[in-house]
Length: 204
Image (cartoon, rainbow, N blue to C red; front, side, top):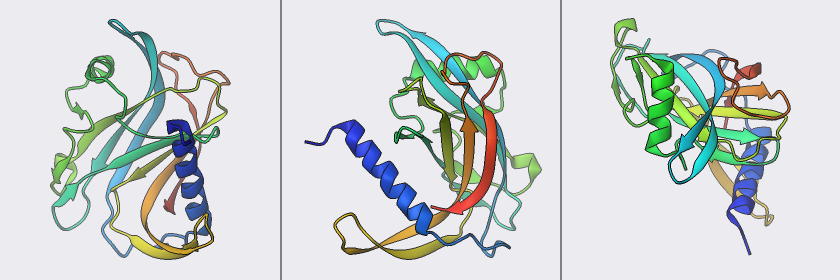
């Protein structure tokens, strides 16, 4: 019987396998690519009525369209841990948590992950700022990795052998990978942030 945790771990394992088999992105982009500036990865504890205190990761970013055309911006962010958990941003994040994080950031320009989706016009003056949030499902992890997609038009088809030994195909997208080390036990760190130890573009 497959539990939700088992399915998440299976998805994480498949993703890791595909990354291991993936080709490198083109050294010089041949498709459109947006300029992205990623802020620190921080944590917050939020007291939810009727639920209690829950902890969350949150990440801010700024994206600028430096191409020669307006583009539809539909980013996606996933967070993985060294325990095999893989979570899409916004999943199991109540609206009250998003409101709390936006209030902490105190910026009129930062949008939640739904509001930021849309046409991204060219130029610095039209740059967008967003925030993405994930629940902390395990406070005892050594490493957290974030995969940010939707910032490049580069894609690549690859063939691989699935878990059943059958040939399969997948389409990989150029993705920004951000790897962080944790202080051992992840709690509300206030103004502090997790340490970024690796940042690179990969095909995933």
